[in-house]
Length: 144
Image (tube, rainbow, N blue to C red; front, side, top):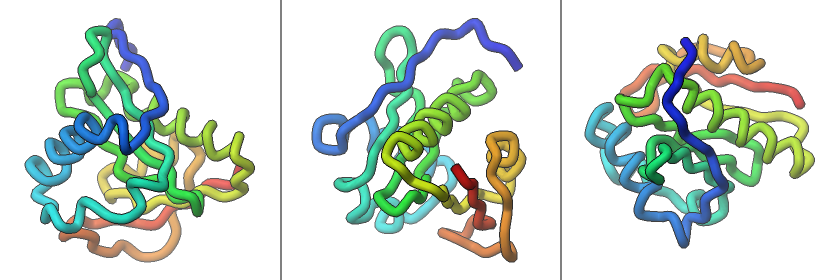
């Protein structure tokens, strides 16, 4: 699906951009997907590379993070912006950050319903399905 809606993706700092990053993740994970709030926040937020997608009015519409070990996670796009390339732009931004940093392998735990999305970006599913916060997932990797 092509989109005429305009948005951009930029690097975000947890310290400086904590409010929009948390709001996005609360909206998608805690409210929509009913992930228990204590499971959403961890010590990796402060040390991860974050991506923040914003619309043409600078409203936060999506996010994702890249941990120091090459793990991509917390990919979230608000409902009104899904299907418009925001998730793909965030993922490609994080992949580019990992490549520039010298990472050789990327890992993520994909919600089962999103496996096709990640496969279109070169990730390969491994192992059995497992539950994380009550949501079915599979491990995926991509070599850089």
